[in-house]
Amino acid sequence: AADHAMRTGEPFDVEVIAVTNNGDEKWVRVVGNAEMKNGRCARLFGAIWDIDSKKKVDEVLRAERQKLNDIIVGSGLGTFEWDMTINYWQVNDQWYTIHGLIKETAPDISEEFFKEIIHPDDEPYVTENLNLHLSGKEKYFVSEFRIITPSKEWKWILIRGRVSEWDQEGKPAIMYGTIQEISGLKKMEIDLKENAAKFNSIFNFSPVGISLNGSIHDCGFPFLSLIHISE
Image 1 (cartoon, helix red, strand yellow):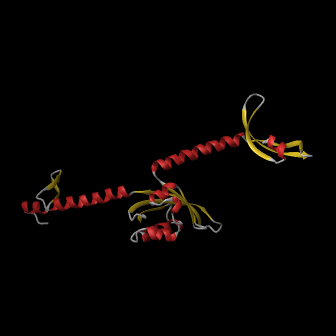
Image 2 (cartoon, helix red, strand yellow):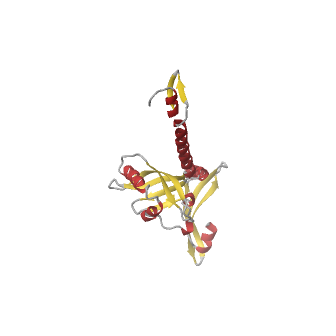
Image 3 (tube, helix red, strand yellow):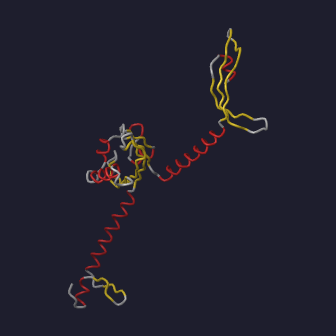
């Protein structure tokens, strides 16, 4: 950078590792300029700042951000930052994947976009939960709902968010959060409910009973007639 400045007269501002007199390495910021006379460098001047502590803090923060990003990617979570002051959404790549979208061709993320993809039966529930959080009545915005993808596939989504910044008037400004596809979990939940209903139906019309500590805890209707007990 200094050589270039001496040849061209252009100023420079660089961060480099310097070696001290006792052999230690230290990050420094060097800002300089060249005074040119007759097309040649007559004087090179500038200033040097010790930025070693800042660089070390920056490196720790970078490592922590990378670790957090690895955790998010590994967990399959979509992330979002919603700036409510301008209605702008910043999302990660997994957010698009969950919605079945290609980032480069995805539509703008807006209120109209969500109205088009959220199941009509779920939209009032989601809106109510969002308003409860925005009004301060709930600490978090949490909802489970269905969305339809461009391939006409219905997916169950779990969204969790929280307002972290407010404007000067105290109104919600920015919300951060995650989304997660839970279609598999919802299918298991539905299957369990259906199996429980089938079991109850079969049990109610079977001549069997359940006894706990000598007392009849539950039994099917035919069992009642066997022991001559009316329902």
